[in-house]
Image (tube, rainbow, N blue to C red; front, side, top):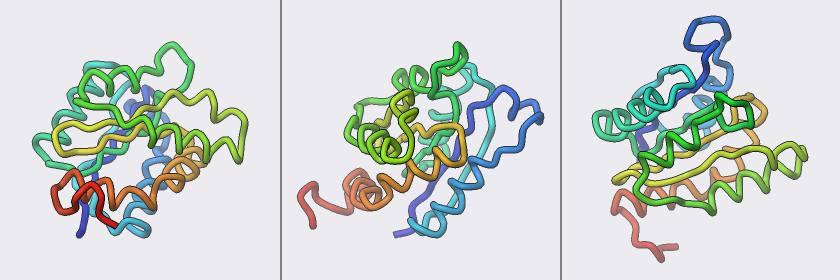
Length: 164
């Protein structure tokens, strides 16, 4: 199955064109190489809750993305509000994925415990918050990559929950 994937970068500087979005490039490479996914939408929005929420809703409902990967806005800075925006639009949380990403990243850096990213389901789409740095994106996404096909298979109805 070729999964439909959307990438959302939350970054004030990125949305103004003041910073190159290298984290999204890492996501694109990993999705294409490791998951065999197809990028169906990509955008950069400022760290504004309403804009992040609207983008996630459009990516899931208009583009019918199986997987929405966000990058940025998961730290402790005052404008880091991606998890809060995500929690407002998901139907159910998937805390195990967030925990696995933090545990995997903790093997590399103690600062991983400061990441507040969440994961959840909206309709039949999986939404995953990744950190804003390319290194953090790589470590976090690779910590869950092997489970994404099964999770997406269940959400899409192609697999039963207890399939091997």
